[in-house]
Amino acid sequence: MKKFCLTSVILLFITPSLKAQLNAYFVNVGQGDATYIELPNGSNVLIDGGPSGTPIYSFLKSKGVTKIDHVVLTHPHNDHYRGLKKVFASFDVKNFYDTRVENIEARGDNNLRELANAEPSCRTHFPEVGSMLDFDRHVTVKVLNSCTEALSTRDSSKINDCSIVLRFYYNGHGILLMGDAEAPVENAMTKIFKSGLSSTYLKVSHHGSRYSSTEKFLSRVQPKVAIISVGKDNNYGHPHKEAMDRIRATGAQIFTTLGGTQSLTIPAPKRGVELMVNGQIDLAPLTMTEAPRFNMEERPFESADAAALEQLKESAE
Image 1 (cartoon, rainbow, N blue to C red):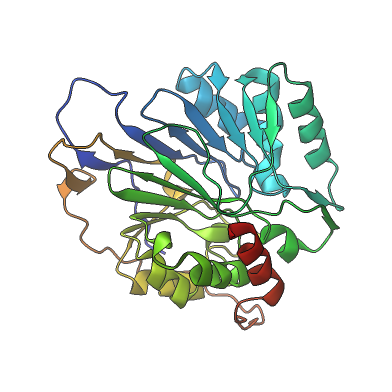
Image 2: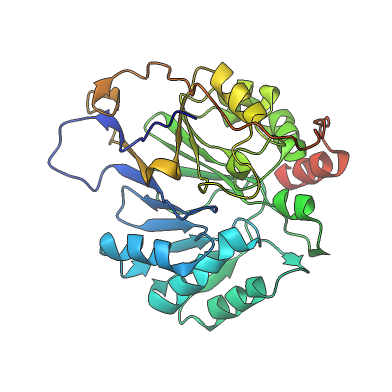
């Protein structure tokens, strides 16, 4: 597979102030997820922490971080929560956002929740679908998926589909962060939020699994840049060719954390904005000429899962 490294995706502007811009970093944590966002008002957000503490800790220390205003656990799988334990042990965390999903196969998720409860001055939140998170008055942060009803399960797909999905919107550009939500949730979201899914930047769901990134969903999002957090030679075969083909068909540029931590910047409004990628103006489509091929038995996509759709409808009302 031919790899492209996105060292920066920059919306070019001229200003002496850096606080008015939004910076997002898709941290190279191996086979897992961790996204760090610096908001225009100076506060910060960490979404997931990867499968171990060392990569995310090293990244945050390199950024000079001492406190984190908002920590989000999208769902209790160890490639998302383990690194957060190191974060709570090492940094001052002000707010923790969680689902009410109990992963029966894991103990570490509850250990993380205990750390959050023990953190001085840290408040735990269970964000509901359709709600707005008050991170920065200049940035719209909307919750597009979550599970706020108590659920105990060992079913990996059910846990994935409880992922907290967030859409950040600033200066005319959306960043859609999908966690590990799979096709049923994607399909339900297209029915509920419709054009509200449109985003310049898509953090691809579930590390590029074939069970997500459906054509209908991608047609709603219309991403110009798709970023996949994935580990080299992982046991799951991520990213899957089927998902890569669907993303490639949108014309979006595709970047993975195989090339290191990926970043993007959205400047303040009214700055004479031009889209740039790796120092070149415009987002000309790039393709990945080869994607992994696997002999795993295909599981067909389902139409919108009834339970997922009903839950989203009830939460969005």
